[in-house]
Amino acid sequence: MTQAILKKFFRLTQFQHFCVLFFLLSILYVAWWIASWPGILGQDSLATILEVESNQEFQSGKPAFWALYAIATYGPWRLVEIPIAIQLLLCAIVCARVLSWMLQKMMYKSFLYCLLFVALAPSVVYYASSLYSDGIYAISTAAMLFEIWRIHQNKKIDSAAACILLITIPFSLFSRPNGIINIIAILVLAYILSRRERIKLAMIVIPWLMVALYAQLAVKQWGKIGTVFPVALYETVGFLENRPMGLWENNEPRVTNKTIDALRSHGETVENILKYYDHYYWDPLVFFPKGPALMALPKSAKQIIVHEFFKYNLWHNFPAFAASRVNIFLYAAFADGGFPGIKNAEHILPQTKSKSIVKFRNGILHKYLSEWFDFTFKYRVIFWTPWLGLWLIAIGISRTWRARDMAGFTICTTLLLQLIAVFSFSIAGEYRYLLAFFTAPLALLPAIYAPIKNIKPETKNL
Image (tube, rainbow, N blue to C red; front, side, top):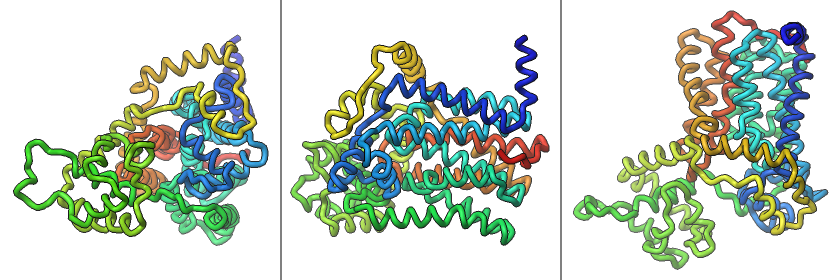
């Protein structure tokens, strides 16, 4: 009987496969959502909520589009369930889309891996059900790159690709600072498409660009953290860390005097600043109540720190800088950063004006799914780490270059640039910054192995 059911299942059309997978994923996502109701909330979630509730007087420092998304989905109803429900729905749609394609192309190993260890991976479900941009960004990026690969091969935007691009582009490009790198894949695609198909692509992309522009103009950004200043500040403080061997004592100064003066410009001593230096997180330097709060430095001081960093401090401390980059990256890759628990909403919601209520804590779903989460988190070096995605990027760059496969090379190169950006500019060992590489096999497995198996990307529309 089981064999008969499987035969019938594999004979389904792609649209039928999509419907079955969408239903399955939706049921499982909702089960987890109920277990963690109203969703996973952390300090960044709190900052986002407070930004909306204070009419942006409180600044979360998140991208303008993400703030606009929170304003539109959380603001009118004060229910965190609404933005989280949208994220889970989008994740179910795009994962079902890619998985149904794999089934139709008989990429069964890739299908099983991506179903069990990507779409249903604890880290993916965890962040998809949280008020963080990282989960929806990671899934959207993988799905968008998959569709770009298909379009690139077909030289045509079919209705399925158009729909997926329409719902993934805003989150892939604008929900995280490094997301703008993904526009490279879109520009390459526009270059190879015919004029008619290019117009189709423009009709999908340009409206979202207008929304992003509106977000930049409408959302207050005076508290924006930025990209270059944080890494310049964090690494500069690290360069000043005590070195017992005294190797710098009779040599040139570790950092310039202008840098020291800039760090002291709002009344903190270097000694006190160094007390809050952490090898894995910049948070104590800027967010701790009793810390030096270096984000409050005058604008002129921030400019000096960045200028002196690239003029002198970086090059005279490059080994320390490189070691710090590797240290933070590996800390994130092994999922050793802090994670809000599934019961964290009980502590976050009372600090807000949200109408959301914690429910279902005594239910059977909470009991068993929280145990499942705790088990995978305990062994997160196995279940959470993004090594396969990183390995596939390396393999993909090599194979697609040798094969002169422009479509696959574009996808792999875009992800490589993302990796370089995250490695170079991360100022905290947060696993979520690498989540896009965990979900990357959704795009990389088809892009790398479908051409090897002579699988044509053409497919019927959903």
